[in-house]
Image (cartoon, rainbow, N blue to C red):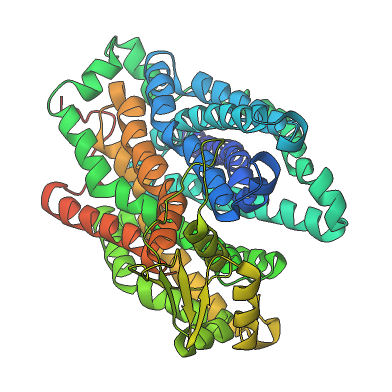
Length: 540
């Protein structure tokens, strides 16, 4: 009897050790992969000057964001390619391949010549490598989440997969930390010349470490059992996307879960960072620190909401996160302006700005085809200052008239406009002495908590939504469209909306509308999944 008890205890201990090893190895590799992917995003404003032509800085920034978005746009294609391989060949093999692609592409970005050296070949090569990153990430997440979930005990899937959910934030934090250390310890000129490459070179070391750890993993037991019984899918793409009701659940997973989750994620982390640095003109060290602290405080809540979803369900937590985010984004970002750059808020209220012109163009991609007229130049200048403005019909006989408070400036003389701004009390940049650091941090932590609510339970929810034979493929596509297209397009779309309207808050309508759409569809058409046995569940 004692021997049996000892054997049973030993088996339980071995299972617990294996469970922790699976979570650690899968999560650590995914952290490094997110680090690789988000290096570009964090340095997007910096890259605008390096890889795109000079002329219109807002337009160049838009091009940098467009390249940033390209990596997200291609992610669903990576989900299709690698998801199919994962359902046919295995989870372990597939996410070994994806991490090699990601690490290699990131390292090569660190070797790229700039626009000044090779002209238009620079952005072309940058976009190409960004696309490779997107394809790799499209296959990574679904593999890691599926692999961990298929190792997890039935009543701990939310908790175990929530560790995977921390990896995107930890990868982002790691990217912030490495870039911040490099920029703060180097001369600004040296960093601009070559120091920006260091974080990309570091990815080669992280790649080697990740591959070494993942090679020690075993294939998912649920996948092995399915293959041994001959129950696997021979055509996971067809079964996932062209057979009912699987295709219905793929669409519902996208519109009723991952789209809203994606925009809440990117608003609370990336858009908040860009808003601090680009619009409010807070120095990068302070902005990185604020965001980094909010991530450190918020990250344990991924685990908390994953654990809570095992108790009360995944769907209601995700839906509530979308709702509260949509209801509070406007007051939160307005409060961020109030506490980070109160002088900007006061100046805008005291000196409303109007641009009277009719020939303004809208630039998203800047290239040899781009032409900038007087209106474009003035709007570009004001947008760079973080100033809101209103557009009005042109004055007869005048190409453009800019009214700042009660002062009118005719033509596109930005030096004269700058002088008027200065004379009327405008100061460039946030005054650190006026920043309310505590309140700014509280606001950022609140937005990260929204992220943890929608993101912590999503992996378990998606895994449970689909059968084993098509799980990797089926969950990966809606996840990466929701995050890669709806979420990844947020900085570009929101920046374009701000540039077009002249309202620094107008871009928030994008995540709000998407989050509300997800709330309605999710509540009406999706059901709770936490009690499903993923070993036997098959809605096909």
